Image (cartoon, rainbow, N blue to C red; front, side, top):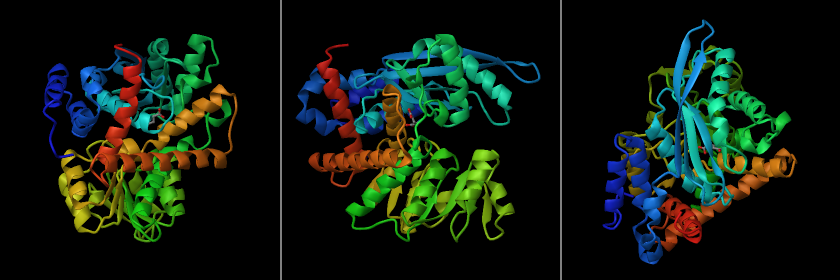
Length: 449
Ligand code: GLU
């Protein structure tokens, strides 16, 4: 990180930029991984000889399609759908679908690229993919969301399957959307194929803990980083950006582990509640009523809503960015460090800009990058696939124990790999190298394909 690219790797990166013009987030995600790989090529010349890095940067398949649907008022609408099936060396393509107006190919490719290494780190048999649409669910009725999901699946169904590609949720896609998409897949394929999607409802093939998994996993990862430093969550003041699924269950686990979360946010502003956030209220507002976070102050007069405020200006000891990519910039990182922040765990994908990450690494605080810290979500999706394959359903406790074990293993793997490659304490390097090596070995074994 920050060391620039190895001279063998620079031309590979140059070619990624030339071949994928104007995909800024994809370039950023590729650069961040490639910056870690110099020492790997020195130890493993066979990876360079067989062009593993060049191959990994080129998706195996990219699908772009039209999604036509009709509003409640009868207006015809056209959105664009994507599924980038990036790498299947370790298992069927796996990764979420994102519905957000900012979605374009560059976003899906950055997410799909990250997913390859994240999924490898889980130790589960899953390849990397991502998909979604520029559809904006905000303000849409249930019926509109249903018709949109059905139209998307009318095209997507021919490209997915339990042994081919297994989508799930991401921003804008939760249990409701997975339900509509599963229904349409079942209808078109005439199959009860539970393993084709994850994040399903509990009555029809879903797994306990999947809803909580990304947030719980991220908190478990930070807990491990703190333990290595002889510390814990106990009594720590924490802030968590976002107020969606990841943020909510990050806050829940922080509280269970003895920390106190005082702030969260949405795109409109920040809620600060010094005595600790009322999570039941946040769940009611966001999960049940689909309201904005500013309504929190209607119920707690001692809480403050900062319209347009930035959560990283609030002093904390542990910060967990759990909203979206590039939400934490260099200046925010500097403010956090100045305020005495000792640990950062990324619940979102690539929430910290390269400058921000550099600040954290230089300050030598515990910094857990998303592809390691937020891998608990997709890992629990793989647990859901296991239960589907054996037509079984595990208890909450058993499933959470498995998630916890997976997060501990990911932490250990990243920690040890960083040491082995001469960057002790650097989880960015550890995650990139450990994830890359797993995929690279499998690709070598499979030949030039
Ligand atoms: N979208 C989540 C992620 O970024 C979960 C993907 C999944 O469960 O397949 O990892």
